[in-house]
Image 1 (spheres, rainbow, N blue to C red):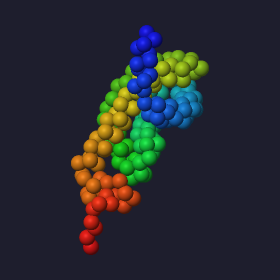
Image 2 (image 1 turned 60 degrees about the vertical axis):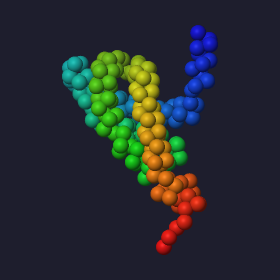
Image 3 (image 1 turned 60 degrees about the horizontal axis):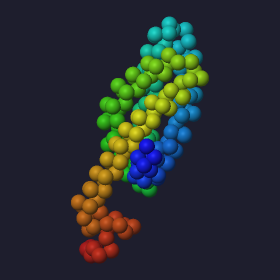
Image 4 (image 1 turned 45 degrees about the horizontal axis):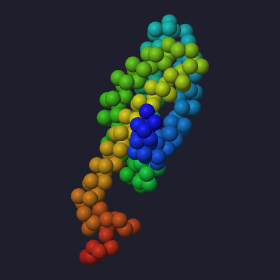
Length: 173
C-alpha cells in the first residue's frame, strides 16, 4: 500500500489540486448559506416535496453559475486571459451540465434528507468525485487548447510573444 501511495503521489499535479481546492473553499460557504435559505423557503412543504424543491432550486439557481465559475476560475488560475477564461467556461458548460444534473440530483436526494449540520460533510464527500470529474474536463480542455495553439503555428497567433506572434515572424503592413 505504501509503494502504491508513493507512486500515486509522485504523479499528482500539485498546482491542479490547489486550483480545485481553492474553488471548493470559495464555493462551500456559499452553498451552505444558500441551502439554509432553501430550508426557510420550503419549510412549509412536506418532507418529500421540500426535498424535490431544494434539489430543483440547487440545480436551477446554484449549479449554472457554479459550473461557469469553476471553468473560468481554473482558466484564470492557469494564467489565461479573461477572453480565454470565458471561452473555456462557454465550451465546457453544456457537457458539464449534462453530467451534473443526474449526478447532483441523485446526490442531493440524500443531501436534503440529512440534518442541516451534516449536509456540507456529505456534499463534500460527493464533491470529491464531482470535482475530480470537472478537473478532468478542464485538463482535457487545456490539452485541446494547447493543441490548437500548436496547430495554428507561430505566425498565426500560436507563438509566445506579447502580441500573439513569434519574434521570428516578419510582419507585413
